[in-house]
Image (tube, rainbow, N blue to C red; front, top):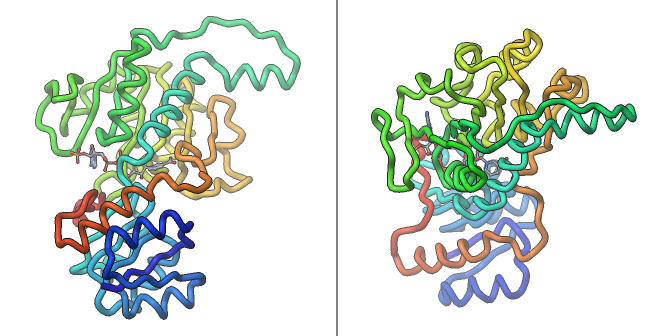
Length: 314
Ligand SMILES: NC(=O)c1ccc[n+]([C@@H]2O[C@H](COP(=O)([O-])OP(=O)(O)OC[C@H]3O[C@@H](n4cnc5c(N)ncnc54)[C@H](OP(=O)(O)O)[C@@H]3O)[C@@H](O)[C@H]2O)c1
């Protein structure tokens, strides 16, 4: 088999890939043009870089391994992915994502964003703050990220429930948390923090809009670490300005980077973090072991890990 790497593999990682598939031939793309040329003869592609741009030139590719967890961008090229197994990096960054999501929740509850504004004005501004203990958190998106975040917040005493697509009614699942299916909106009036950890799909685009925000208590907070497009930003700003929401912490945006003129930058009750729930990392990349194991499976004809349901979009 011929394997195209969309990144420069450090020697130890390349050695592990070779050991996982001793009969494979490896090529490395170093530019968009070289990726487009090399993908024609490739059976498998590892890495995201130039994947979307080069897919139209693929002729025999059977497997593509993304190094990100969300594959909405890759699926924009879905017409070229027919018959191709797409796998993602699900699970690799759950712990880091959960730490960031929990940090955003704590920052909102303890008013750290407002404290920094007061600090900038040298203002000693003491006011009543809320506790995470007994705070009711509804986690929209019950994947690896949502569950890890639920565990982190529950450890601090929060009352957490989840929402997933493939659940019916409202029942405790194997994690011990109560999980809602399509009736999740019933939970909104009793939610203090609505936390979005959703992939961007046809069904989740603007899943949280004016109606959902209006159903929350007027002092509720919204946190988004999934994808920007799952939350209606205009509706969020309108609710904040009308005093119908306590605040929001956003790591992801409909347009990234968030444009300098965007009103979200200037809304005091909004805490902006720049798509850093999964932050940039040095080598070794945390996805390397997953790539090695999946290549071993591919070469051995075994089932791959983290297969994306291309119809569902995640
Ligand atoms: N901010 C960052 O730096 C960053 C970094 C990495 C990833 N992300 C984003 O985080 C997202 C979540 O990652 P993950 O690994 O936890 O994903 P995952 O394991 O694929 O889980 C996705 C969850 O969303 C649920 N879901 C999907 N469509 C839904 C719908 N229409 N209504 C309700 N629930 C729905 C799924 O329900 P089922 O369980 O029923 O399938 C599943 O529980 C990724 O897709 C990515 O976009 C952000």
